Length: 115
Image (cartoon, rainbow, N blue to C red; front, top):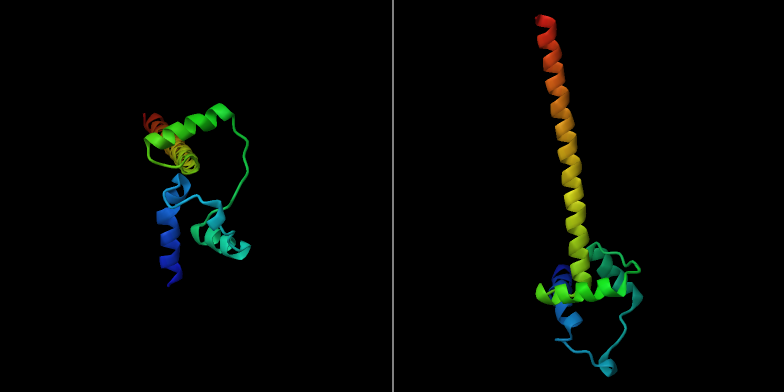
């Protein structure tokens, strides 16, 4: 099996594992070798982090995850991605607005000199 095909299976089934659809039996659970876990994270461009959140926030995220049919960790990742994308768009929009204002001021100076 190719590495790409193997990775797509992990990506496609992650929610099924989180929801327990593919099982949660501890007697059948086997810890993956750390090297494999590292390779999977690297292939997906992922890095594990630890973060402390309010319990109420986690419960709210879990409820929203159910509504959107996502695991709460996947939802958190999506929320963070949307926030970062939005911030980048605002930064780009601000830069464009400044550039536009500078151009208008430069044109106004030219008109003032010509008059």
